[in-house]
Image (cartoon, rainbow, N blue to C red; front, side):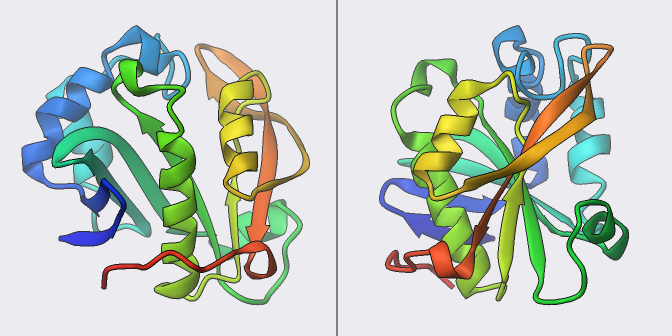
Length: 190
């Protein structure tokens, strides 16, 4: 099911047909350097287990297409109460987190990630009524941080030893975008 379209990009819920391309991306060391880790390549069974079998969870995994061709993955989820407390957010409007990667390295550094993140944030604010959207890139991934800043995210603080990546606990940068920052001028498909 297609969640939304923006320019040449479309975002649809992950399906069985997407497993082979996800396995290709998640076994490419260039992608794994930034997402999952080069020590954790995924075959089709692993992709099915980790990404498809959790469709009943609070995480919505999505395939990103550009002009009809798969180019990446994005997921979104509501922060559960314990995560809200850990990150310093109390009760209030829904907070969503997002994670993503562009799986085709030849498409990196073309502004696609910024457009994708902006469109996803709009979708979460408009369709899901999010009050805040967060993302937590590794502090040593300046390309991702620049992408998110261009999409309207602001750095909040460093989360020390937040993510296990290639056998090491790494610091991440907590970034946020609230409704007041959001332009909301992109059309969303329903």
